Length: 108
Image 1: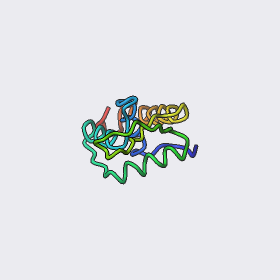
Image 2 (image 1 turned 180 degrees about the horizontal axis):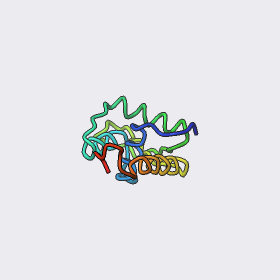
Image 3 (image 1 turned 90 degrees about the vertical axis):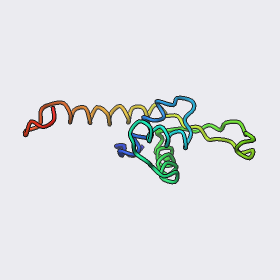
Image 4 (image 1 turned 180 degrees about the vertical axis):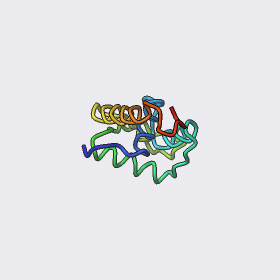
């Protein structure tokens, strides 16, 4: 575990929570695009997921081989307890920063 999550890592972790057990690379990318309008490349998503796994924030499991994937298996992702805790901390930090009126009164 290395510390705070980047914004892109937060996006991936939140998408995994939306998708539950159906979270794999492309579905994570598509959920982020659908909900946040952010279009990560496929390579970027897999780099983000690889870093999260390396840091102990998620684990993988292999799905069944399917004919439509040429006999290849999907890799599914799910947050670990450490990953969930890191996401909770990151969201709490954002909430704290959003918590009050800004000096210029623009955002409350």
